[in-house]
Length: 536
Picture 1 (cartoon, helix red, strand yellow):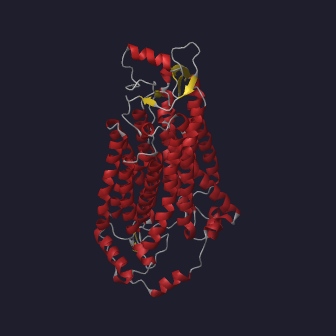
Picture 2 (cartoon, one colour; picture 1 turned 120 degrees about the horizontal axis):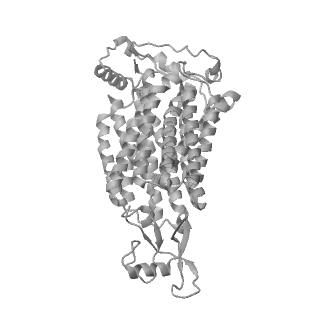
Picture 3 (cartoon, helix red, strand yellow; picture 1 turned 90 degrees about the horizontal axis):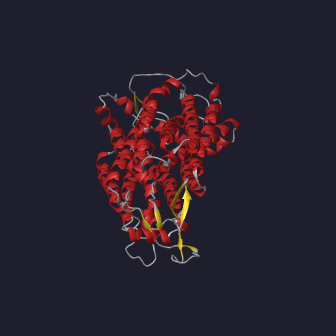
């Protein structure tokens, strides 16, 4: 019941996360000096002649186009000197206004858009730690409500940001609060789900995230002004403030802080909704059990790096998280650079391919295993990106649909890899450091997202078809490398999860069929981090 409510927030997070990582650029050229009502669209024959006299032509993608950043100092003279400009006009056929055009993130300031995306990811990076710590200290419910309030206020404030500094400050705040909502919802939701359902729950959440992404694509098609779109995206966040009254505190957290009566009340209500009978003896949380938990030796995440086997596996997983995030956000953000199709159409296709990716995860994860599926997703996705380089360079413009097709195949595979790597990492890291290790893994994913804009900008620095091909080549090579490295990891299908550092170090030597299966409802007396409070 509570898990379903958390899924609704993932629709919103799909909208918010994709909106804040997109900064769109229309075609531009320098504004003609002294022509106050200049527009990108040609107004008349006289206007066309004035543009041709004032703006030099450059070759881009094999075509002569207006220079975006320069104009002639003396348009009517024979020896015309080319100079830079500080005022531009923008093509409004696709967007009425964007943050990039309003704040002039173009030409010498073009790196500002990439920096803005990096700052958003930096906020996401920081928010995962900050709100995770707040959730552990003050409770999941309070941390979730705080993140909702901050995201709502930050989203509205961003709409009135009239300078680049304010723009990136509010984006950082929104990135941090977005991470807080996602992290707290995921953790609390998983604490209400038994072990047999965790892989399923970890993938189903992606369907709702993708639905939010698809909704944003549709809304952005009809709303072409970024201020209006920002309000449409930010306003629904307020609805989730009612979760303060709908979502209870996590029983696991309550047990950890010895608030036993509150935990028992929530567990009994959950059992009643799920039509499970709990014997009174099962709810006797003995003091000895709690004392035993307090006396357990503390384990640090540093110990993952003190054993050669664990060190190698941890590095491989961190690299997998970084590359899958880089390729995912890269292929999502590169949809306007594929050579054919509109930005909205390509974005919608990039969104829709995530649905079959998630379905493949659900169907194949418990059949092929985590390792084989992750390796297949990453290598096939990388290969598709590399093949798209060939179509960009050697296929004529009329058949560039092949580039879009290969790019979408790459996006499908990478989206599937994102779904697998989370579940896979959860099962490889030992219980004693699993939460910290997953948090650090997520940090490496944010690092991948932070460098993505610079990969795309690197392609813009290279002229011609190679400029369009270079980002896809980089995404492909890194993905294939990640897929091959994943072959060195142990398979976790039908395996007991490792509890200690020693268990994780000896993981590959254990029998792959040692996991016990129990279909009877169970209520644990003193749950560990790896056990459910109510499982089935």
